[in-house]
Structure formats: structure tokens, C-alpha cells
Amino acid sequence: MASHSLSQLSSANADIIACKKCPRLVRWREEIARKKTKRFVDWNYWGRPVPSFGDPDARLLVVGLAPAAHGGNRTGRIFTGDESGNWLYRSLYKAGFASQPFSTGRDDGMRLTGCYITAACHCAPPQNKLLRKEILNCRPFMLRELQLLKNLHVIVGLGKLGFDSVFDCVRELEWTNLRSRPRFGHGVRYQLNNTLTLLGCYHPSQQNTFTGKLTERMLDSVFRTASMILGKA
Image 1: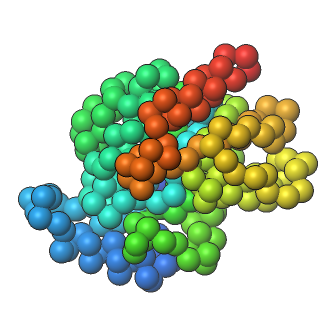
Image 2: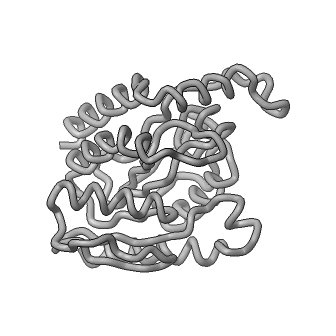
């Protein structure tokens, strides 16, 4: 089961990496990879769509917004190489889903257990703003992942966009009887069907963490709730 799922998810990730559906995002991610930034001038930037990452037998799915220009777009791994990732992986580590509390690059030894991480969009967008068409272009990848992750019980949507993207996919798959999008908020909890729970969480962006809108305790609380739900599943 695990090897079959791994093979299918690897194939899905290969398709993500090869995607060029959004000309605006292609131009931006490649421009950033060429110009770089001073503190990472010695890096060979990834500069392509950033694949999803994690355990093919995951019971927890974490859905973010999109890679950061000098984070995932540089390192080639989702939520890796920026402050958002530092916050996320530290929290996942404390909850027992990650092998270490930091993520700096694809070769840093990070392993996820029982957890898989994806995003509403796999390319870094200008000013961290996505166009609706770009979100829709990326949606088939999440639909495919949801169908391949056979053991899912909990999904955490980071930020309103991540949260809404999850629900839109679940509704398209006809996995829920909820007719309208649930209201996003930090710590909200919705039962999508008999086996799948959706949790809302503020995105661990610097805009939220620097201002105190999201604290470490608040983030940890969401993943403690996820662990609690999985313990009863």
C-alpha cells in the first residue's frame, strides 16, 4: 500500500514540477531564481513549481497558500527555507509529525510521519497574491492528492485561501454534504463527512507571527487538536 501510494504521489509531484499553465507565475518564479537575493546569492535556486512533501500513508494533510519567493522557490521543498516553514515544522515536530524542528533544504534530513504537506498553488506568486485562474489551474493537483492519500482523517487549512481550497476540492469530489463554504477562523473545526475533519489555522506568515496575530501557542494548539482527533479515529 505504502509503496503503491508513494509511486503515485511521486508521479503527481513530477507533473507538478513540469507544470507551465500560468505564464505570469512562470515568469516570476524564473526571474526570482535568476536575480536571487543578496543573502542567498550562492544558492542555485529551484525556480520551478514546488512539489508536495510527506508521508504517503498520512492521516494529516496540511494545506498552505504558495511557496515563498526565497523559501520554497529557492530550496525546492514546500515550507522550507523561510520563517513560515520554521514555525510550521517546529509545531509539527512538537506534535510528533516531523523528525526535526527546522527545515533548511531538501537534504537536511527532514522526514514527516503521518503527515503530508501541499498548497493551493505550487508556484511563488508576485507579492504573494494569486489570481483566481491560477488557483483553478493548480486545483487538479490537490484533487489528485486527496484521492491518493487513502488514510486521511484531518486536514489543516492554513489561512483562508488554503482552508477554502480544501473545501472546494472536497465539495468537487462530493465528499461532503455541506453545501456552502464553512466560515474560516483560527481553531475552527468542521466535520466534512464521517471520517474527515477540516481545521482552520492562521497562516504562519511573518505578517501574522510578527504582529502576534498568530502565536506559537496558537499554532501548537491546532496540531494538538489534530493529534487528538487522530487518536480517536
